[in-house]
Image 1 (cartoon, one colour):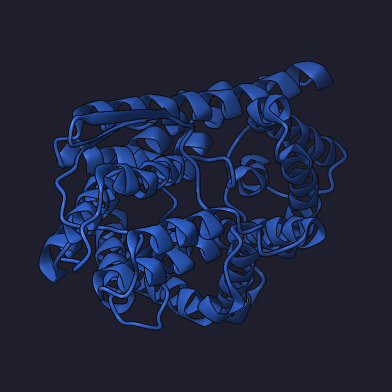
Image 2: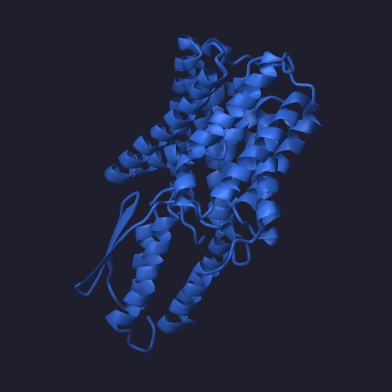
Length: 408
């Protein structure tokens, strides 16, 4: 407890913006948001009642109630790192409530870490790096670089423009599918186009939201989990509809959307180099501080290695579960150490390695292409993988201590 009494008004001046910030950056789930607010309130000598849903929150302190409605998103990761330091200082007793309020305002006002050209380059790296994990070929590198550039320009141009942001998933799917189908029609690529389409849309695929929904449902956060799950499936349907619209625009049969694996020709060093490129893309895309990059890269490589080894031995569900367990346990244990990035920063990139949402999109696009059995199999894979991820993360959080949290 602090020595100087804190009034309810002073505490609300801190907890209100804190609740709003946590809500707007809760795309990965609300599991620890309420606990964070209550713990800070208790430190300053007050009780707080707070409830978080997927896109709304209600805060009550001493009869004063504030409510917020915000669209959840992924917060700039350098802000998350600074927030961890702020919370640590508060709990050490080194900050008055007024200073903490000003520090939080400064964190929220921090501009993104990287300029727009770097963000575009980041989305290209993000797309190419993930694309290599889908199909380890030079054609994947070339096509992903081209389509990643298109998506990068679209995403960066849409930042701060709500109307463009709302239609960005559809436009991205339409443009990317048009490009890949045109290359297919001219005989410039081998295999099916779906494996070349999905990496460029990976930024929009809500695999993390799907898994957050499963986590929240397992944690009895029914309203938040159910609404996030519905949202995730709607986004996948919008992305799939963009591919369908592309076939209509080009007047090509929907059967041209098919998913056939092409043997890799990059070799093991190319595959692991792809994950390094992907990690660089995460840093530039999500505004990660450079000093946090080596730790995030290490966890991405660890998660990919564990998942690959266990998958080869026991299959996808076991590999995904083990990868999720190792990722979460490592992030939580490292995130508690002073001077290291918070758990959220550590596991965000590693989480994408597990990629449940890409299976769902590939399944939907295969279905559109008239391959119903392959489509159902892809969607079933998605359900199994996001369940494996959610259970792996829950078991890890239960094993190593407090649940998932941005401050540590």
